[in-house]
Length: 336
Image (tube, rainbow, N blue to C red; front, side, top):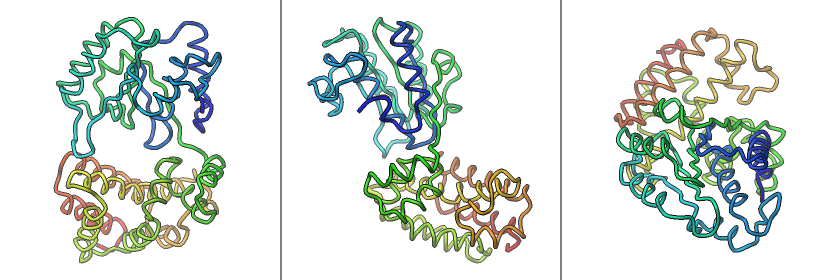
């Protein structure tokens, strides 16, 4: 494996190869992009490239160093993340990282610190990280992975170079899913439904989410005011059954809301002429809604879904947040 194996991110691979070759590698980068487009995979491959003892222009993928990085056991590669049950990256995570930063690299010239879901840094932990970024030790590389860079402190963003990770095109996604043994019909549907995220497509396939997705969109596109609590309760119940704990269920609900988010985004794009109708997934439901919604109403529903996701992420009552969303959707669709 190498940087070039991260599909759809050739621009990032070229950038880092050039920076390393010219001795211009900065001390901190933000990898910004949607969930599941390869940010963590790329960070791992970059760490291997910097630390590999056998490869010349690329990591070999076979030496003890590369194998240790792959196994998350290399002493100079540190992953900082919070358990799924926690909403924040707390001070204790950054305190431990700073302790590791102060230690000399054991195997080479670099120590790599990868902060996953960096937008989850709370104010205390973010300010502590800022102290480290202001005076980084020689050879330390900080990679901050996030799907929401706007939620990070502006002072942290200003001390990092931002590398944007892009959603994958369907032409790249379908062959990739085929190689991962996803059957062709499901691969085609997932490639259209996942918003360019191979990680999300694969997770949806493994979870068998497609039948639930079809039921969700069928009900949501014709939901009436009397049905909003029924659908909200069904979604929360589904999430609790699929998750190990209450907080994990909350993240599962956020994942489920990706389906209407992407659906209404496609509808809005079609209404404003940015997406061809014959290429639009879910044509049956699109055609039912198209006559009832103006571009502005489609956009407003999309914004309501994003607001609901924000409220649920901020620990709002899941059922009430969903019911409020569905009530608004019903009104805008002319069924409330």
